[in-house]
Length: 186
Image (cartoon, rainbow, N blue to C red):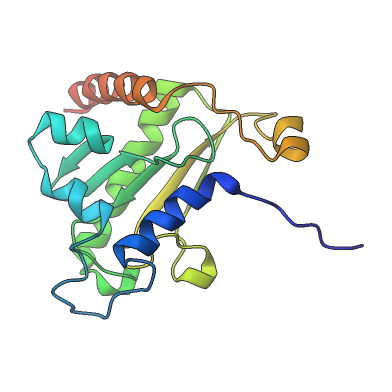
């Protein structure tokens, strides 16, 4: 059996953006400038500013970290959850920070189940560029909603993903769902 190439042209915009910003290489631990071009740090910096949040697709930004929509999603509703600290690995976080991160992952799971009703979820962390991390300098968790048939002939034959909802619509829908969910939880 021969190995086939999987072409992912939708990732090129993102990779070019990282290359031009200098964030393609992992920052050195403790670097003061490592977060200056990080889109996650930029999202965290706008805490409390609703326009900043909308532009950066931030659904939740609190003392535990940030939940945002992935601008280059694998499926509709693909979320990124990150700690506030600009670190590369789970072991770089204090125990309380890891707990906060997992709390946000659990909230994201609930949000997607209530808001999008997926049949399943993928939850994962890519640590290091060779492991698939597109932004290796700022640890983040992917929570990807899944439905039967979400990988179909378009992706296989046309190397195109069909995302059924615009990012702005996903953001509005999930923002409203999150507000309602938080009201119920508190």
